Length: 551
Ligand code: PEP
Ligand code: MG
Image (cartoon, rainbow, N blue to C red):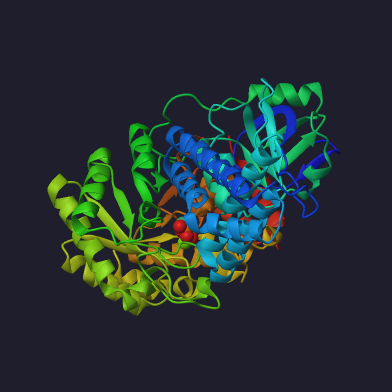
């Protein structure tokens, strides 16, 4: 790494070298802009601009897939929303210039979304993106968004709106570096699903001029500015392994299933077509984020059956709806809470809406019966052994033979022995376990250091779960973002993880790392990490041992 290396949070692995390009900024609108001739004409112009933006987003949605497509459809619907147009008319009637009227109307909506909080508050970026695009059309300036200079670029921005992320496939962008954004946030998950190396929480990138050559390493979170010729050659030499790597195992032949995280049926088809060993986490709430009415049992049965059938004999772990907090489901009202991440979410919602859980379990059991494929089910946000037992009994009563829970609340990790006695398996959600053990909101870029999955306190909790798993001979999976970091994957195996579930993109790197290490190596690397005084120290100690032992 050169002296000019900038540090951020690597969230999607891979290395590339290209010129830096900045996302075109949203146009500034002002109350001092010239006011149009008459309100009717200006309203028609504003509505046309919003229509054009909605059409553009829909067009992009048609080309995108999975979560990206869903987010674009929602954003297009916001642009077409008649209440937004009423708000623009109100601003125009007060004598505001047209583009500024759109900005103010949208800001009013943003304030409402922020007050509601959670997932809706996160839609503020998308809504502002609608305003910026409409304003650009009205002012006749460049549409904000991704430049297309005709050569590969590393795209940088404060953070990315999903509308931008969705247009990345087929663009000139070969890597992403954002000033803000959390390691488990939206940009990170989407970049990974698109297979682009990405770094978030890298504020220093703001001072690098557009056009500068940069070398991005999404695995280490470093950006080398003006890299040497040798460094560039190094990156070109690092090729993603070709082909399917086969089942995960350590060098001494001990199997560690390498599974995929999916959230939509498009993800499922992609993963099923790859050589993945199965699905360790199917985030079912992603199927229904935009639904105003509850999905019926028949509809759910069909969806789950198509996913199960796609994976054949490979296991699929279906997570029951993780509604609430950053993922509210419009058809599952949970009331307004001061701290939704600490409130009614995940399994807790079943106290308010028992039918939703029952319906989902029945649908999954029917899908498993109809397809003759194994379905495993697990509940999110479980805090106590009692909750775990009740859920497992309910799932078994529905005919689902294998039922488990996620370990993502520190209390559940601390009492893992009790929990592992009553479940068929557990899966550690390091994203939430990290946020709760460090008391750090996982969507906050400013808290990225606390949210680092190398935090020794998080590793301590994982070790407790691993020990309990060995004691009860119960499988312990890990399905948070941590599982996709090759060196951390070795630590997790050393701490007792029996399977790792990750974005499909991460699998080859983790596979190669485990294949180079024996089980005792993984334990030694894990012990070194546990002795760390902080995340950087834990990583450095683990790397020290890794370099001594590994092939
Ligand atoms: C986690 O918390 O680590 C997890 C895998 O679940 P989600 O990211 O969906 O909350
Ligand atoms: Mg979670």
